[in-house]
Length: 244
Image (cartoon, rainbow, N blue to C red; front, top):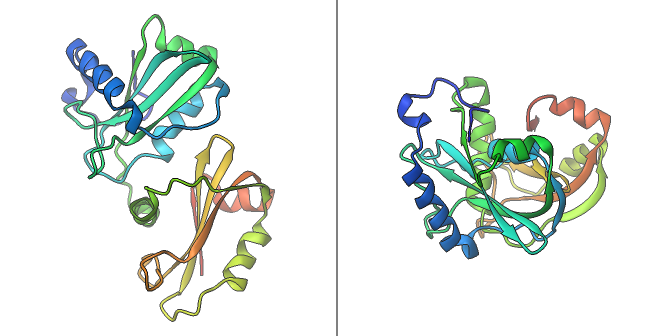
């Protein structure tokens, strides 16, 4: 099945995927499965909205990415759902070390909408929308830098019950490094299966991440099960807050 969830102004070439493409992609997925990031917790239910939002929230900054794929495979506890990214020629997009961008997750059941998307097949092709709105430029730049610096981090962040607006803002005051380049702070929000992945980092006047002498960005990251109402309102429909 083809899901045009994010598609906008796609050329005909980007919209087509052949049976040969599907067979090749599934074969490569099975071969590269050990190198694809695995979510450790088994999910009771995976929903259509969650798998689709992943393609938006975790889309790599790699400009080759044009489409996404959801692959379903049997598992002793339910089913493995693999989500990977494709280029315009339907080739799997990989990092420089050869590992594919994407994730694998085990779910006991699927919600009706996701089950219907699969139908009697185990392959869903998702057409992604190009992000080229001027207003998103700063957000894309910061997310790109964040991804490039921390994409190989294996340790899962700390999980806290809630993050409030006051706690997030106080962090920029109480934990501000003594570095004259720091002019702003950034709070980034990414979807996470346990709630929200929150990253707080420090920026210079050009919205570049400020790092210590070892090249490590100043800041913190954690998973919050929920955000308080004031912080939710600050984010609105965006995933980045700049604090000046």
